[in-house]
Amino acid sequence: MNYDNILLGKVKDLKPSGIRRFFDLADSIEGCISLGVGEPDFKTPWHIRQAAMDSLQKGMTRYTSNAGLIELREEISRYMERRFGLKYDPKNQVLITVGGSEGIDAVIRSIIGPGDEVIIPEPSFVCYSPLTVLAGGTPVHLPTYEKDNFKIDPQVLKNAITPKTKLLILPYPNNPTGALMTAEDYAEISKVLLGTNIIVLADEIYAELCYNTDKPNSFASAPGMYDRTVIVNGFSKTYAMTGWRMGFVCGPKEILGCTLKIHQYGIMSAPTTSQYGAIEALKNGDEDIEEMKAHYNMRRKYLLDSFKSMGIPCFEPLGAFYVFPNVSKFAPSSEEFCTDFLNKQKVAVVPGNAFGETGEGFVRISYAYSMEHLRKAMDKLDKYINHNL
Amino acid sequence: MDKNEKILRLLEENAHYTHKNIADAMGMSEAEVTAIIEDYEKKGVILGYKALINWDKTSREYVSAIIEIKVQPIKGEGFTQVARQICAFPEVVSCYLMSGGFDLAVTLEGKSMKEVAMFVFEKLSVIEGVTGTATHFVLNKYKDKELIFEEQEKDDRQMMGL
Image (tube, rainbow over all chains, first blue to last red; front, top):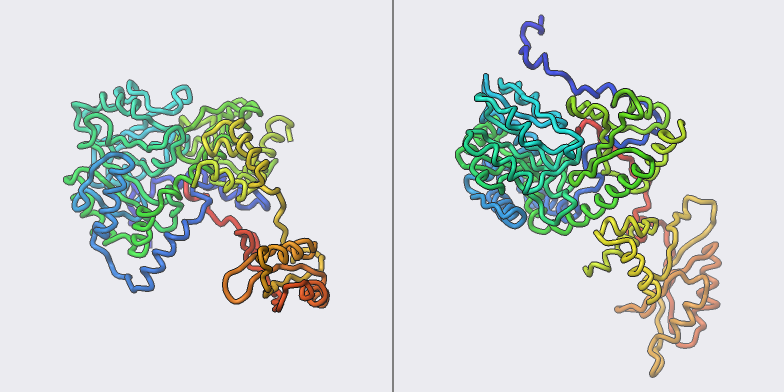
């Protein structure tokens, strides 16, 4: 078979993740300390696991409705009101997806077709551009900079908008930078969007991990933005439930109706056992969030203090579980820094350019690790930076 | 849980956390945390800081046993006087007053089963007020102080999750 003639060009042309090679290298090094992982080190709280096991014991093993268990959608609706002050009708404004990732894909495919432009902030999580391309759309990269704490500059956004712009992705709190957009920042963004027909896909999967405030923030709360915002959120980061693949989408019922069709034909329904776990998480998991957040905050500040004492510049990230220090004075490129640090000290951090051009000169360090682990890694970073070892 | 008691929870989780670490987690100043911890130490809420050791992984030869003790309470004293005498022995690791079929639950450590048995026989059972003992030797520790005594878990998370 000549598969080359069969396989779709736009899929063949998708680049495999640029840093695969780097990860393979890290994997091959015995005793390597990783700071590269993008998922919580905590285990899913026991009561959530127990609820899922109970559902299995009771034989609740069938499909749910396409949109997900109504009980779960009602809990999500209550959660969105409790935590964000946002109202979503569980009947037609909430959709349960297979992780946030499926939600992102299905929303993009609901809106984007050939000729449509999608504005994607950079640096960002790596899925938005490939999914846009697969939907036939054109990614337009919106650079963000260290001088702005990696927030979106409204003027830069304004300049990126063309008559073809159909969707703006707002992935905040941000992976990889840890940048957070405040309600005030979002108010400025909303001014740019008012009067346009641009829809916003707010990837708020890290919303609960915000450190300057008790309450998370959603773009849908910005003035006049509710009707044009589709929120993607989920349980992976908030409740340490990555493997459960539990996400959800909230937004205008007209959009969700279309997204539901894509989900219905492509997925049927999200995993039933996971949905029962998710109900328990929302009912009784607020304290778990608080406890994990306290630990993340301890680590975040420890890393920032360590960088300061080592002389590594780093803006203060207020969200997610990443710090994004500037290593440009230590190496000619992010990749060279990471490779050399890995070879000499056996510590793996992720080169910032993996997340877009404006990530060049930076590295992503995850603090989804214990304090002991982070202390070891910072000792090694100090040796590398300040003692040439 | 009281906010200050969350500090205790963090210390119980890891006594190596510095006051600064705890302050960062709690959103307090380091000085506040230091003051609260010192107060807890003064009041005897925090009794000490110890390492948790899995002696099974060392060359130390030892056995642990849990002894159920029945006690005839003394008028006006209850079980306290007997308990105090028991606690004075360095071999005694813990001593609890229990509800149910016996009165005191005592954890003992010794070099050998014989040594522990002799201790119960010669030291505990002869205390005035002790009316009976039952010795249960520990065969294996699976979990102690919230720690599970198995091989340290390997971090199996993948870096694929960018």
